[in-house]
Structures are given as C-alpha cells and as structure tokens.
Image 1: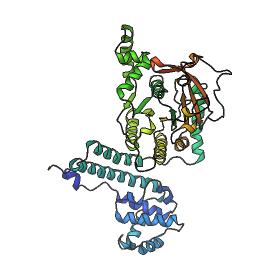
Image 2: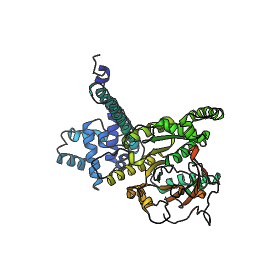
Image 3: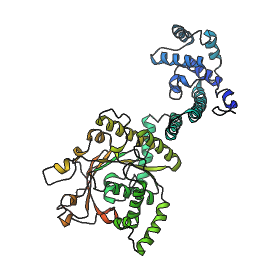
Image 4: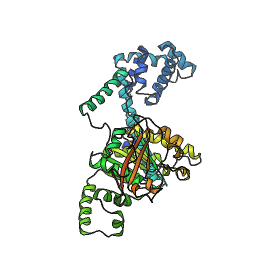
Length: 466
C-alpha cells in the first residue's frame, strides 16, 4: 500500500446501502401518505443511497408539505416538471417502487434501516476525510484533531431520537420525577452545593441549568466554585469538569488541597508546613486523586472546543457538573462582532450545551466597576452590575452575586469573615441572600457561623429583586 492512500479494499467496496429498504419506504409513503410524517423525523432525502430515490423522496415530501395528495400520477407529473422523471427511470420506476412494498405499516422500520446505512456511509466518509487530512494537511495537529472530533460528533448528534412531544408522555416523565422527590422528602432534587441554606433556596443545582456566579475581582469566585466542585465529587460522587481559563491547573490543584486539608494557602506556597500539616496534605493528596475531578487550563478555548471536550467527557466519565472560569475569557467565534453580540452568542451556546449534556453548567463572570463607584454605603452588587448583563441575565437560569463586605469596610472587625451569596435571579425558585463564612487562610467557604448577622436576620427567600 502506498503512503497517502487508504487500503484498496476499503476504497473499492460498495458503500453500505439497502435499496430494497429504500424502495419500501417510498412505496409505503405512496400507498399511505401519512407515512411521510412518520418517517420524516428519521430520514431526509440525503439519507438515500440511490440518487433516483433521493429525488423521489424530496419531491414527495415537497408535495406533502404543500398539502397535496401524493399518488403515482401526481408524483410523476411533479417529477416531470422538474425534469427528473426520465432521470429516475420514468413511470416504470414508480410502479416498481409500488410493487416492492411488503407492508406499508412498517414504513418507520424501513426508514430506520435506511438511516442506519446512511450513518455507516457517513462514518466511512468522515474517516476518509480524516485520513486525507492526516496525510495531506499542513495544519497544526490540534486543528486536525478538532476537525476529526467535529465530524464524528455531527454524526453522533444526528443519532438523537426525536423527544417525546405528547403532553401525556411528558407528564409520565414529570410524575416519575415528582414521585422520586416524594419518596426522598426532605432531600434536594438537584446536585448539592455543600451549603444547606443555599440548597434550601435553589434545591441544588438542577440538570440543564445555566448558573452564573458573578463578582468583582478577589471576592473569592474561584474559591467558591472549588468548594462546589469538591462537594459534588466527594459527597455526591459526581464527575466535575473545570475549564480554568485564567489560573493554571497546578494553582487550582493547590486550592483543592487547601480547601480539603484546611491548609494555610500562604504557608503552602512558601513551603512552610509543619509535620502535622504535611501528613494531612499527603492524606488529602490521595483522597483528591481518587475523586472524579478533571481540569482543563488551556487558554483561549472557544465554545466549539469546550463543547467537544464536554461531550467526550460525558461519554467517558459521565460528568455531572461543568464549571467555566470565566465567561468573559471564552474565545468568541467572531472576533469582529460587537462585544455585546459576542457575549450573547457565548451565553446562548452555554445554555444549549447545559441542555444537551443534561448537567448543571456554572459560568463565572466579572462585574463592572459600578459597585465601587456607587455613592451609597451599600456596596452589594446587583444584576445591573454584570458586564454585558443583558445576554447573561436573559440566558441564565440562576444568577448569583458573591459579596464580601469587609473588602469595602476593612476597619469593621464584625464584618471579617462574612460573605454573602446573593441569588439575584432564580427562574424556578425564590431569590434571597445566603450568608457564608469565609476562611481566607484555607481559601474556603463554610456554612454561616453567625458572624455579623444584621439586625432582623437574613432573608433566605422571597420575590424581591437585586
């Protein structure tokens, strides 16, 4: 075999196809026009191997879509008007198709065979393109790999069956979910955060939700998502995939060590740990190594790349949570578009990705300087403080704003260690403020210990706005 060419046996063999199944689909649709609707969610004209069959199905579908009846005479006339009748073999071909139908009621089964053969042909074509790309392309290896992944993913995604549409079927699924909650009364329905007051308001992170956590720099956004990730992996056994677009994976790993082992972050970076702390660190190293935590710190990731990685990790590791640190660092698809449009495209694709993967997706975001420039004493952030807030606010299911009052009033000792998670938007539940305790030395948040609780206490829910 010469270099640069696929094996001759792979080139010369007839591509996968089943002409009998193709004729049976077309004949079934001719005999019973309602069969066109049954097979339309499975196959398209391009799925047929025979060019004549492709033209016939496309014409039948067009006639059916315009409300016209499809029978041999009307089909032949429509094909003739397009100049396709002789190309497909004339009236004899149409009659041949009619006579080939074993049973019109099996149209969907025949369509499934046609689709399966198309998938096989698509895989062969994709693999051929990948081979050619590998031999002939002068592009970087990463670009070739991405194109190969995308071509396979397109075929995989096309395999998804049509979702249930009837309300009766949907209600059965809804009742199954409700019954599961009733049987486990008192527990949350989503993925726990590790903070009981936060879980009370959100009922945990729900599948397919886009959750945005926003704050000004140095408020502890990354520390909080590390807390959430550690709880998801250690307490609930869920795989967590983190895209760290700002910090390196080594820095993130050190954060996890500090959080779980309660190690002083400054002492760890200085290499100044005592014997007990070193022992605790080694024990925690093993614990973390056994957790399903995955970190990608490749800078400049775009949505296409992250989507491909998420799909692969979902299949291989069954990840239950995706975290992106942070949204404004995602590489836009169109760099020439206005910034607001870039962010809108990114948040929309993040929401679609969460829905596709059926896992909660947490994206960190930056707040603008409006908090610092606000003249009043209340420096709590609001939804309006989100950078490019329109698109983020619209697409997110939950928006949380992280606030530490001591940053603005460090002279007040009562505020030291106090943190607030402000749930400013909650599509499926109440909004409110959840206080947490910030342990700066351990880079971790903990359930509220009662520090500096304001007069009248905290409001853990409600329909107010922020």
